[in-house]
Amino acid sequence: GKSENVSSNNFEFKLGANYKINGRNYLQAVASYHNLSPNFSQIFANPDQSNTLLDSWQNSKINNTSINYYYRSPELKIGLGAYFIQLRDLTINKKFFLDSEAESASNKELADGGLINAFYTNWDQQNMGIEGSVELALGRGLSFTGVVSAGDYKNISRPILKVFDKFSTATAAHTIYLKEYYIPNTPQFVSSAGLKYELRRNGFLTLTLSYIDENYVEPNSLRRTAVGVKGVDRNSELYSKIISQEKLPSAISLDFFAFKSFYLYKKYTAISLGVNNILNSKNLISGGFEQTRFDFTDKNVDRFPNKYFYLQGINYYLNFSISF
Image (cartoon, rainbow, N blue to C red):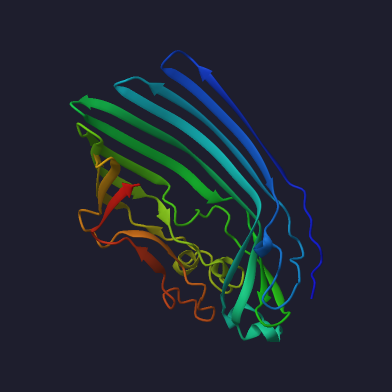
């Protein structure tokens, strides 16, 4: 049937300022605020089965502030920046399999586990960091480019996880102890160094070495609840193993790219070749997650091991285009 009408007022603004120190030195500052209405998936508790609304939906708020310095000359270009971003009152929808031990036996419809529709509510995150880049002309068409970014991206609240059974009206709620956990699957340190060679006419070659570190897996929220550590000594190694967030190993990749354009028979044509992971490293992990299942009885962390995403080994693509 028809659901209840939902309405929400939202607004956003952005302010920016540029200061020209002289012809080669510039400062830029930007500040923005966004008050955003929730979307469909953040309002309806279980849209596959009913038109029930989430009982405490709210607008999310985003503060974004950055300041940058630029130096520009024919031979050298430099960029330095810092940023601070806060995201508050986020509502994030996630579907997963609920273990039976996560709910009390008194809740019969949830006690046997199964597929559920869940919502993380009142979730606050904070991202801040610094960035730097340099481009230096070496002469004879050759130039060097370097980029580095170091950040601190983490959760700054304990969200409430609201659980809705997929095929009934049964519900539950858990406080998730995710405060100070890192935002998963995004490296917090990234750097790259590359050489670029400009061809005499309409083309270039690049060779880039990239390095990433401080990348973390997505934690299983149900392990970070009172139920997840019930009966476990807080000073034990097992307790630390249950609540710790796995840090992924650092990764290095070497990549090549070439581009050349032509003007043939009054038609613009271009060809490009990209070769990624030239070193053919097959153990590079780009991300991962803890399974949403957990051994609540024996607290065996390894019973449902983490899952990982691996980068491909050496791979290439060749593109040819013609403009009519």
